[in-house]
Amino acid sequence: MDFTVSEKMQTILEMINEFVDKELIPLEHETLTKSFSSMLPMLAEKREMVRQMELWAPNHPKEYGGMGLDMMEHALVSEALGRTTIGHYVFGCQAPDAGNIEILHMFGTDEQKEKYLGPLIQGKIRSCFSMTEVEYPGSNPVLMGTTAVRDGDEYVINGHKWYTSSADGAAFAIVMAVTNPDAAPHQRASMIIVPTDAPGFNHVRNIPVMGHAGADWASHAEILYQSCRVPKENLLGEEGSGFAIAQSRLGPGRIHHCMRWIGICNRSFDMMCSRAKSRVIAEGQTLADKQIIQAWIAECAAEIQQARLLVLYTGWKIEQLGAKGARKEISMAKFVTANTMQKVVDRALQVHGGLGMTDDTILARFFSHERAARIYDGADEVHKSSVARNILKSY
Image (tube, rainbow, N blue to C red; front, side, top):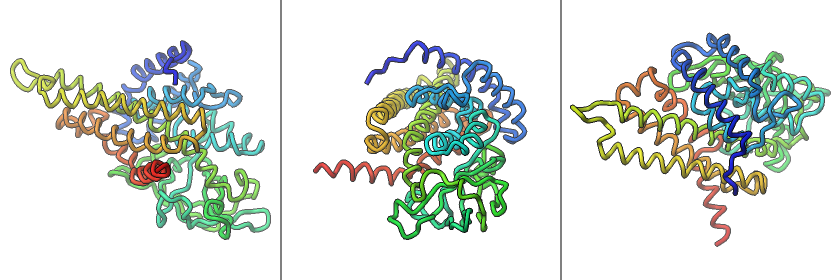
Protein backbone atom coordinates (compact mmCIF):
# COMPACT_ATOMS: atom_id res chain seq x y z
CA MET A 1 0.00 0.00 0.00
CA ASP A 2 1.04 3.58 -0.67
CA PHE A 3 1.30 5.86 2.38
CA THR A 4 1.62 9.01 0.28
CA VAL A 5 -0.85 11.72 1.22
CA SER A 6 -1.81 13.89 -1.75
CA GLU A 7 -1.11 17.63 -1.70
CA LYS A 8 -4.85 18.22 -1.71
CA MET A 9 -5.33 16.09 1.40
CA GLN A 10 -2.33 17.62 3.14
CA THR A 11 -3.90 21.05 2.65
CA ILE A 12 -7.29 19.84 3.88
CA LEU A 13 -5.74 18.26 6.98
CA GLU A 14 -3.74 21.38 7.76
CA MET A 15 -6.90 23.49 7.56
CA ILE A 16 -8.84 21.07 9.74
CA ASN A 17 -6.11 20.78 12.37
CA GLU A 18 -5.75 24.56 12.55
CA PHE A 19 -9.52 24.95 12.95
CA VAL A 20 -9.65 22.30 15.67
CA ASP A 21 -6.80 23.96 17.57
CA LYS A 22 -8.08 27.52 17.29
CA GLU A 23 -11.86 27.17 17.26
CA LEU A 24 -12.89 23.90 18.94
CA ILE A 25 -10.39 22.93 21.63
CA PRO A 26 -10.90 26.31 23.37
CA LEU A 27 -14.62 25.41 23.66
CA GLU A 28 -14.00 22.11 25.43
CA HIS A 29 -14.32 23.41 28.98
CA GLU A 30 -17.78 24.73 28.15
CA THR A 31 -18.80 21.44 26.54
CA LEU A 32 -17.72 19.67 29.74
CA THR A 33 -19.54 22.00 32.12
CA LYS A 34 -22.66 22.94 30.14
CA SER A 35 -25.39 20.88 28.48
CA PHE A 36 -24.94 20.11 24.81
CA SER A 37 -28.30 21.77 24.10
CA SER A 38 -27.08 25.06 25.52
CA MET A 39 -24.02 24.89 23.27
CA LEU A 40 -26.03 24.52 20.05
CA PRO A 41 -26.06 28.24 19.05
CA MET A 42 -22.29 28.49 19.41
CA LEU A 43 -21.73 25.19 17.62
CA ALA A 44 -24.02 26.36 14.82
CA GLU A 45 -21.68 29.33 14.31
CA LYS A 46 -18.69 27.00 14.08
CA ARG A 47 -20.56 24.77 11.62
CA GLU A 48 -21.23 27.78 9.42
CA MET A 49 -17.53 28.63 9.49
CA VAL A 50 -16.77 25.09 8.30
CA ARG A 51 -19.25 25.49 5.45
CA GLN A 52 -17.63 28.75 4.42
CA MET A 53 -14.26 26.97 4.35
CA GLU A 54 -15.85 24.31 2.07
CA LEU A 55 -14.93 21.55 4.51
CA TRP A 56 -18.50 20.53 5.39
CA ALA A 57 -19.51 16.83 5.34
CA PRO A 58 -16.12 15.54 4.17
CA ASN A 59 -17.16 11.93 3.52
CA HIS A 60 -20.59 12.57 2.04
CA PRO A 61 -21.57 12.75 -1.65
CA LYS A 62 -20.83 15.95 -3.54
CA GLU A 63 -24.22 15.93 -5.21
CA TYR A 64 -25.83 16.46 -1.79
CA GLY A 65 -23.40 19.10 -0.57
CA GLY A 66 -20.56 17.01 0.86
CA MET A 67 -16.88 16.92 -0.09
CA GLY A 68 -17.03 13.40 -1.53
CA LEU A 69 -13.81 12.15 0.09
CA ASP A 70 -13.15 8.43 -0.22
CA MET A 71 -12.84 6.15 2.79
CA MET A 72 -9.07 6.46 3.25
CA GLU A 73 -9.18 10.23 2.85
CA HIS A 74 -11.93 10.52 5.42
CA ALA A 75 -10.01 8.18 7.74
CA LEU A 76 -7.28 10.83 7.91
CA VAL A 77 -9.90 13.53 8.47
CA SER A 78 -11.47 11.45 11.23
CA GLU A 79 -8.10 11.18 12.97
CA ALA A 80 -7.75 14.97 12.92
CA LEU A 81 -11.31 15.60 14.14
CA GLY A 82 -11.07 12.93 16.83
CA ARG A 83 -8.73 15.11 18.85
CA THR A 84 -11.78 16.87 20.29
CA THR A 85 -15.18 15.52 21.29
CA ILE A 86 -17.09 17.98 19.09
CA GLY A 87 -14.93 17.70 15.96
CA HIS A 88 -17.10 15.35 13.93
CA TYR A 89 -20.31 17.13 14.90
CA VAL A 90 -19.03 20.54 13.86
CA PHE A 91 -17.86 19.19 10.49
CA GLY A 92 -21.14 17.37 9.78
CA CYS A 93 -19.78 13.82 9.77
CA GLN A 94 -20.86 12.64 13.23
CA ALA A 95 -22.23 9.24 14.13
CA PRO A 96 -24.90 7.96 13.87
CA ASP A 97 -25.83 10.32 11.03
CA ALA A 98 -22.75 9.37 9.01
CA GLY A 99 -23.75 5.70 8.96
CA ASN A 100 -27.39 6.48 8.22
CA ILE A 101 -26.30 8.68 5.33
CA GLU A 102 -24.33 5.77 3.89
CA ILE A 103 -27.38 3.51 4.19
CA LEU A 104 -29.72 6.02 2.58
CA HIS A 105 -27.25 6.74 -0.21
CA MET A 106 -26.74 3.04 -1.00
CA PHE A 107 -30.21 1.65 -0.39
CA GLY A 108 -32.68 4.54 -0.27
CA THR A 109 -35.30 5.22 -2.93
CA ASP A 110 -35.34 8.54 -4.76
CA GLU A 111 -38.20 9.68 -2.55
CA GLN A 112 -36.34 8.65 0.63
CA LYS A 113 -33.21 10.45 -0.52
CA GLU A 114 -35.11 13.63 -1.23
CA LYS A 115 -36.99 13.58 2.06
CA TYR A 116 -34.25 12.39 4.40
CA LEU A 117 -30.80 12.15 2.81
CA GLY A 118 -30.49 15.68 1.46
CA PRO A 119 -31.58 17.46 4.67
CA LEU A 120 -29.42 15.09 6.75
CA ILE A 121 -26.23 15.83 4.81
CA GLN A 122 -26.99 19.55 4.84
CA GLY A 123 -27.26 19.44 8.64
CA LYS A 124 -30.87 20.62 8.66
CA ILE A 125 -31.99 17.53 10.60
CA ARG A 126 -30.43 14.73 12.67
CA SER A 127 -31.18 11.01 12.83
CA CYS A 128 -30.64 7.98 15.03
CA PHE A 129 -30.05 4.24 14.53
CA SER A 130 -32.27 1.92 16.56
CA MET A 131 -30.84 -1.60 16.70
CA THR A 132 -29.62 -2.56 20.20
CA GLU A 133 -32.23 -4.09 22.49
CA VAL A 134 -32.46 -4.37 26.27
CA GLU A 135 -33.12 -8.10 26.46
CA TYR A 136 -30.97 -9.31 23.56
CA PRO A 137 -27.17 -9.39 23.05
CA GLY A 138 -25.97 -6.55 20.85
CA SER A 139 -23.04 -8.74 19.77
CA ASN A 140 -25.48 -11.10 18.02
CA PRO A 141 -27.76 -8.91 15.89
CA VAL A 142 -29.70 -11.85 14.45
CA LEU A 143 -31.33 -12.19 17.88
CA MET A 144 -33.97 -9.48 18.00
CA GLY A 145 -37.37 -9.07 19.63
CA THR A 146 -38.64 -5.98 17.80
CA THR A 147 -41.12 -6.84 15.04
CA ALA A 148 -42.55 -5.00 12.05
CA VAL A 149 -45.72 -6.63 10.74
CA ARG A 150 -47.36 -5.65 7.45
CA ASP A 151 -50.90 -4.37 7.82
CA GLY A 152 -52.17 -3.23 4.45
CA ASP A 153 -49.95 -0.40 3.24
CA GLU A 154 -48.22 0.03 6.60
CA TYR A 155 -45.75 -1.62 8.94
CA VAL A 156 -46.77 -1.91 12.58
CA ILE A 157 -43.66 -1.87 14.78
CA ASN A 158 -43.47 -3.14 18.34
CA GLY A 159 -40.34 -3.46 20.42
CA HIS A 160 -38.02 -2.10 23.08
CA LYS A 161 -34.70 -0.52 22.05
CA TRP A 162 -31.97 1.22 23.96
CA TYR A 163 -28.66 2.92 23.26
CA THR A 164 -30.39 4.57 20.34
CA SER A 165 -27.71 7.24 20.19
CA SER A 166 -28.76 10.84 19.49
CA ALA A 167 -32.50 10.08 19.42
CA ASP A 168 -33.09 13.20 21.53
CA GLY A 169 -33.96 15.82 18.92
CA ALA A 170 -33.61 13.49 15.92
CA ALA A 171 -36.09 13.77 13.04
CA PHE A 172 -36.16 10.05 12.26
CA ALA A 173 -34.78 6.67 13.24
CA ILE A 174 -33.60 3.80 11.10
CA VAL A 175 -35.00 0.79 12.93
CA MET A 176 -33.95 -2.84 12.73
CA ALA A 177 -36.98 -5.10 13.16
CA VAL A 178 -37.97 -8.66 12.34
CA THR A 179 -40.24 -8.73 9.29
CA ASN A 180 -39.68 -12.33 8.16
CA PRO A 181 -39.61 -14.51 11.30
CA ASP A 182 -39.69 -17.80 9.37
CA ALA A 183 -36.72 -16.99 7.13
CA ALA A 184 -33.11 -17.99 7.74
CA PRO A 185 -31.61 -16.15 10.76
CA HIS A 186 -29.67 -13.62 8.68
CA GLN A 187 -32.69 -12.86 6.50
CA ARG A 188 -35.32 -12.16 9.14
CA ALA A 189 -34.76 -8.48 9.90
CA SER A 190 -35.32 -5.36 7.82
CA MET A 191 -34.45 -1.69 8.16
CA ILE A 192 -37.30 0.80 8.24
CA ILE A 193 -37.36 4.60 8.46
CA VAL A 194 -39.48 5.78 11.40
CA PRO A 195 -40.12 9.51 11.92
CA THR A 196 -39.72 10.32 15.61
CA ASP A 197 -43.08 12.13 15.61
CA ALA A 198 -44.89 8.99 14.44
CA PRO A 199 -47.57 7.80 16.91
CA GLY A 200 -46.15 4.91 18.90
CA PHE A 201 -42.55 6.17 18.86
CA ASN A 202 -41.91 6.76 22.55
CA HIS A 203 -38.71 8.36 23.80
CA VAL A 204 -38.56 6.91 27.32
CA ARG A 205 -35.38 8.61 28.56
CA ASN A 206 -31.81 9.53 27.87
CA ILE A 207 -29.81 6.77 29.55
CA PRO A 208 -27.32 8.01 32.15
CA VAL A 209 -23.86 6.85 31.03
CA MET A 210 -21.10 7.09 33.64
CA GLY A 211 -23.31 9.54 35.53
CA HIS A 212 -24.31 11.76 32.59
CA ALA A 213 -27.65 11.45 30.77
CA GLY A 214 -26.60 13.94 28.10
CA ALA A 215 -28.89 15.83 25.75
CA ASP A 216 -29.56 16.34 22.05
CA TRP A 217 -26.87 14.75 19.84
CA ALA A 218 -24.71 13.84 22.87
CA SER A 219 -27.11 11.28 24.33
CA HIS A 220 -28.17 7.63 24.23
CA ALA A 221 -31.89 6.93 24.43
CA GLU A 222 -34.27 4.19 25.46
CA ILE A 223 -37.13 3.88 22.95
CA LEU A 224 -40.42 1.99 23.07
CA TYR A 225 -42.17 1.19 19.78
CA GLN A 226 -45.80 0.58 20.64
CA SER A 227 -47.95 -0.22 17.60
CA CYS A 228 -45.94 2.39 15.73
CA ARG A 229 -47.26 2.68 12.17
CA VAL A 230 -45.26 3.82 9.16
CA PRO A 231 -45.93 3.51 5.40
CA LYS A 232 -44.50 0.44 3.65
CA GLU A 233 -42.56 2.87 1.42
CA ASN A 234 -40.33 3.52 4.46
CA LEU A 235 -38.66 0.14 4.02
CA LEU A 236 -34.96 0.41 3.12
CA GLY A 237 -33.87 -2.07 0.48
CA GLU A 238 -35.63 -5.42 0.39
CA GLU A 239 -37.47 -7.17 3.20
CA GLY A 240 -35.04 -9.39 5.10
CA SER A 241 -31.95 -7.46 4.02
CA GLY A 242 -31.47 -5.63 7.33
CA PHE A 243 -28.51 -7.72 8.47
CA ALA A 244 -26.71 -7.36 5.13
CA ILE A 245 -27.28 -3.60 5.14
CA ALA A 246 -26.00 -3.39 8.71
CA GLN A 247 -22.81 -5.22 7.76
CA SER A 248 -22.21 -2.85 4.85
CA ARG A 249 -22.62 0.05 7.31
CA LEU A 250 -20.57 -1.31 10.19
CA GLY A 251 -17.41 -2.43 8.34
CA PRO A 252 -16.28 0.94 6.95
CA GLY A 253 -17.83 2.69 9.95
CA ARG A 254 -15.44 0.84 12.26
CA ILE A 255 -12.48 2.29 10.34
CA HIS A 256 -13.73 5.81 10.96
CA HIS A 257 -14.31 5.00 14.64
CA CYS A 258 -10.79 3.58 14.89
CA MET A 259 -9.22 6.64 13.29
CA ARG A 260 -11.24 8.84 15.64
CA TRP A 261 -9.76 6.82 18.50
CA ILE A 262 -6.28 7.36 17.06
CA GLY A 263 -7.06 11.09 17.19
CA ILE A 264 -7.94 10.70 20.88
CA CYS A 265 -4.67 8.81 21.37
CA ASN A 266 -2.69 11.60 19.70
CA ARG A 267 -4.35 14.29 21.80
CA SER A 268 -3.90 12.36 25.05
CA PHE A 269 -0.28 11.54 24.18
CA ASP A 270 0.51 15.20 23.51
CA MET A 271 -1.06 16.16 26.82
CA MET A 272 0.86 13.44 28.64
CA CYS A 273 4.20 14.56 27.21
CA SER A 274 3.52 18.24 27.91
CA ARG A 275 2.47 17.48 31.49
CA ALA A 276 5.51 15.27 32.08
CA LYS A 277 7.84 18.01 30.89
CA SER A 278 6.19 20.78 32.91
CA ARG A 279 5.25 19.06 36.17
CA VAL A 280 7.94 19.84 38.73
CA ILE A 281 8.28 17.08 41.35
CA ALA A 282 11.49 18.21 43.04
CA GLU A 283 14.03 20.96 42.65
CA GLY A 284 15.38 20.75 39.09
CA GLN A 285 13.34 17.63 38.34
CA THR A 286 10.12 16.98 36.40
CA LEU A 287 8.03 13.89 35.82
CA ALA A 288 9.75 13.49 32.45
CA ASP A 289 13.00 12.64 34.29
CA LYS A 290 11.46 9.48 35.76
CA GLN A 291 12.29 6.30 33.84
CA ILE A 292 8.81 4.86 34.33
CA ILE A 293 7.27 7.91 32.65
CA GLN A 294 9.82 7.64 29.84
CA ALA A 295 8.87 3.98 29.39
CA TRP A 296 5.18 4.89 29.23
CA ILE A 297 5.88 7.54 26.60
CA ALA A 298 7.96 5.16 24.48
CA GLU A 299 5.40 2.36 24.74
CA CYS A 300 2.46 4.63 23.95
CA ALA A 301 4.24 6.14 20.94
CA ALA A 302 4.96 2.67 19.53
CA GLU A 303 1.49 1.30 20.26
CA ILE A 304 -0.29 4.30 18.73
CA GLN A 305 1.79 3.87 15.58
CA GLN A 306 1.09 0.12 15.50
CA ALA A 307 -2.66 0.67 15.84
CA ARG A 308 -2.68 3.46 13.27
CA LEU A 309 -0.85 1.37 10.67
CA LEU A 310 -3.20 -1.56 11.27
CA VAL A 311 -6.23 0.68 10.76
CA LEU A 312 -4.81 2.23 7.59
CA TYR A 313 -3.95 -1.20 6.21
CA THR A 314 -7.46 -2.40 7.01
CA GLY A 315 -9.00 0.58 5.26
CA TRP A 316 -6.79 -0.03 2.23
CA LYS A 317 -7.84 -3.70 2.17
CA ILE A 318 -11.53 -2.74 2.34
CA GLU A 319 -11.01 -0.52 -0.71
CA GLN A 320 -9.32 -3.43 -2.53
CA LEU A 321 -11.56 -6.35 -1.49
CA GLY A 322 -14.63 -4.87 0.16
CA ALA A 323 -15.66 -5.18 3.81
CA LYS A 324 -16.27 -8.92 3.54
CA GLY A 325 -12.77 -9.55 2.20
CA ALA A 326 -11.26 -7.55 5.07
CA ARG A 327 -13.41 -9.00 7.84
CA LYS A 328 -10.49 -10.39 9.84
CA GLU A 329 -8.54 -7.12 9.64
CA ILE A 330 -11.61 -5.06 10.59
CA SER A 331 -12.04 -7.11 13.78
CA MET A 332 -8.35 -6.88 14.65
CA ALA A 333 -8.24 -3.13 14.07
CA LYS A 334 -11.33 -2.65 16.19
CA PHE A 335 -10.16 -4.37 19.36
CA VAL A 336 -6.51 -3.36 19.04
CA THR A 337 -7.29 0.34 18.59
CA ALA A 338 -9.94 0.44 21.33
CA ASN A 339 -7.52 -1.11 23.83
CA THR A 340 -4.64 1.11 22.73
CA MET A 341 -6.81 4.18 23.22
CA GLN A 342 -7.86 3.08 26.68
CA LYS A 343 -4.24 2.46 27.70
CA VAL A 344 -2.99 5.80 26.36
CA VAL A 345 -5.81 7.79 27.96
CA ASP A 346 -5.32 5.98 31.27
CA ARG A 347 -1.60 6.74 31.35
CA ALA A 348 -2.14 10.35 30.32
CA LEU A 349 -4.64 10.69 33.15
CA GLN A 350 -2.19 9.08 35.58
CA VAL A 351 0.57 11.52 34.59
CA HIS A 352 -1.85 14.41 35.23
CA GLY A 353 -2.61 13.07 38.71
CA GLY A 354 -5.53 14.73 40.45
CA LEU A 355 -5.87 17.24 37.61
CA GLY A 356 -6.66 14.37 35.25
CA MET A 357 -9.71 13.41 37.30
CA THR A 358 -11.27 16.86 36.91
CA ASP A 359 -13.13 18.46 34.03
CA ASP A 360 -10.35 21.03 33.78
CA THR A 361 -8.91 18.82 31.04
CA ILE A 362 -10.59 16.62 28.43
CA LEU A 363 -8.98 13.43 29.77
CA ALA A 364 -11.71 12.51 32.25
CA ARG A 365 -14.31 12.74 29.48
CA PHE A 366 -12.16 10.58 27.20
CA PHE A 367 -11.68 8.08 30.02
CA SER A 368 -15.35 7.72 30.94
CA HIS A 369 -17.13 8.00 27.60
CA GLU A 370 -14.67 6.11 25.42
CA ARG A 371 -14.58 3.04 27.67
CA ALA A 372 -17.57 1.89 25.63
CA ALA A 373 -15.31 1.50 22.58
CA ARG A 374 -14.53 -2.04 23.74
CA ILE A 375 -18.26 -2.85 23.78
CA TYR A 376 -20.14 -1.14 20.95
CA ASP A 377 -19.80 -2.27 17.32
CA GLY A 378 -19.00 -5.71 18.69
CA ALA A 379 -17.40 -6.48 22.04
CA ASP A 380 -13.66 -7.25 22.08
CA GLU A 381 -14.30 -10.88 22.93
CA VAL A 382 -16.59 -11.38 19.93
CA HIS A 383 -14.06 -9.84 17.52
CA LYS A 384 -11.23 -11.92 18.97
CA SER A 385 -13.23 -15.13 18.57
CA SER A 386 -14.07 -14.16 15.00
CA VAL A 387 -10.40 -13.52 14.19
CA ALA A 388 -9.32 -16.82 15.75
CA ARG A 389 -11.95 -18.83 13.85
CA ASN A 390 -10.92 -17.15 10.62
CA ILE A 391 -7.24 -17.98 11.19
CA LEU A 392 -7.89 -21.57 12.29
CA LYS A 393 -9.78 -22.36 9.07
CA SER A 394 -6.44 -22.61 7.26
CA TYR A 395 -5.07 -25.25 9.65
